Length: 122
Image (tube, rainbow, N blue to C red; front, side, top):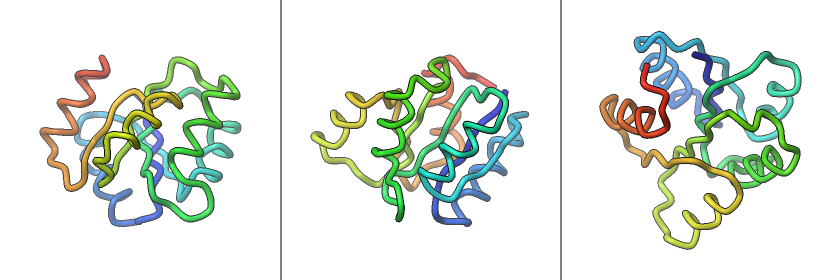
């Protein structure tokens, strides 16, 4: 399984990478939405994108919308990783193509549970 971790925080990227690698997941990192779209254009298939919401340049919401509008990697699951709990935001993200949410702060167990809900049990 391959995952793309997209977050402007190097700490969060490293933490997610460590958790996912312990589950046997191969990880690639991107620092914002634009970087993620560039990686997706040049890379082999990913099963999962873990996408931060609040990033400079291109936000997670803008990225997932661009990804789904372009029909890039239609089988890839997108999990928003966020502190945003506002109901209208959640609906907007789902409407734009997000598949699941992981609320910060999160535990290894909550990540594993969300992956399982997406059919990506590692």
